[in-house]
Image (tube, rainbow, N blue to C red; front, top):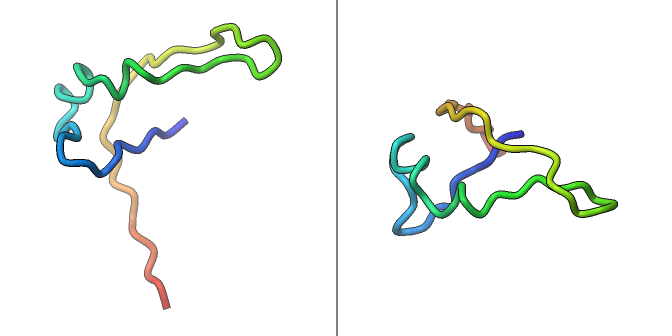
Length: 55
């Protein structure tokens, strides 16, 4: 799953800031049927996703 950091004034600017941020602490991966936890964040990487040119 890819999580995009929101574009806000106090958004994390690097991976260390992200790991300490409330943004990651608020992420929950739960079963849609029973609402039990089914996942956790096991790694963080900065990806460069190419922007799509709009016509």
